[in-house]
Length: 230
Image (cartoon, rainbow, N blue to C red; front, side, top):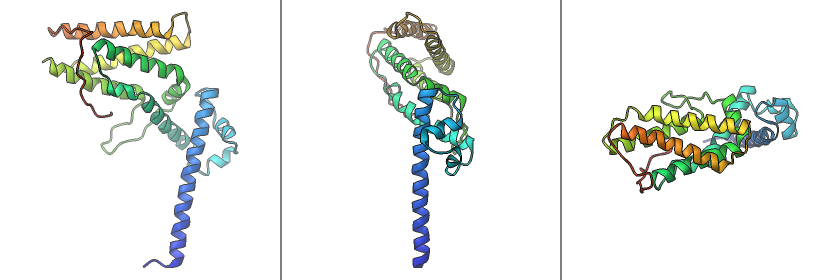
């Protein structure tokens, strides 16, 4: 049976751990505000300034600068995955699903550009129990689309070997095109860009299906599989 003294020590330890975790979250949220305002390449001093503390104060709650960046990147992944949730529940016709996915992605890049760039600069390097790297959001989307394409290719009796290169090729095309559009604004509106990209994506998917002898009506309803979150 634990003594009263050890119980008090355990209680203080638990409270300190909870307070430390709360302060870490507060510092991370301050960092997100600073990134949104100043851009992804901000120094640690700017994060401390946004949090209203000295830089040395941050290091009482984080092991080092890498620990700070990992905590921020983890939070960014949480936020971006939440915003990209519609990508995991696509439904409707092929044309509708493509347009919805691209609209979600382009809106997210437009509104969270600095956070997305930050994630690219400080990519997570944590490992899951199986030893696979935790990849950035682009890779997560590519993996999800790969499984989606594998499902449909199997349904249509086609080989699934092309699923991954097609999925990642489309993600790369859309991401690079939108990133360039954001870096060099033009008179092209976002909805017009979404329309262009949607047509290009369908052209690639249609060619992939036709090469296997499948002709799919892009405006006909298509049942979506219940795939788990990546």
